Length: 144
Image 1 (cartoon, rainbow, N blue to C red):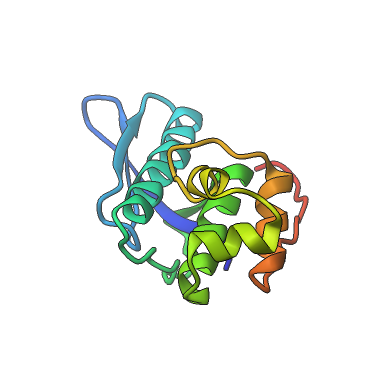
Image 2: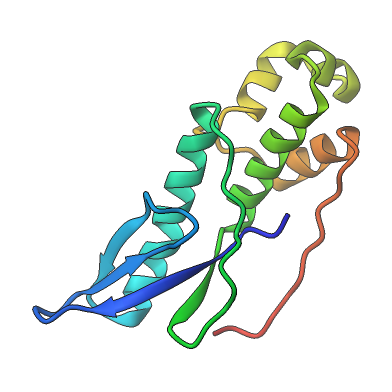
């Protein structure tokens, strides 16, 4: 799963730039400049997807192809890893206790690991992915 979504940046007559995302309709935000609009898009996307995860809702897949009037928006590393762990855990159909057993950790740590509102170190998230049969790969790209 690549957490890269397409966003439409629409300048408004009164100044700010409206940001919407076809694949995540609940994302609507603004920025005074294009850079601010892009950062607001990252923040709004993370908020929306982590909210859906917390509510037990499915995470919408990025399906809109790149286009001339769209810009890619990527989640921050920790947010992408957290969502990947939550999705892999759900797909595995195991209990938090079983995940903890596999990781050699108590249930209380599994609660925090799977809590979208709790910050978790990338190393702990990648270890959880590994025991769930997944791996994360990092791609370093030129800055936009």
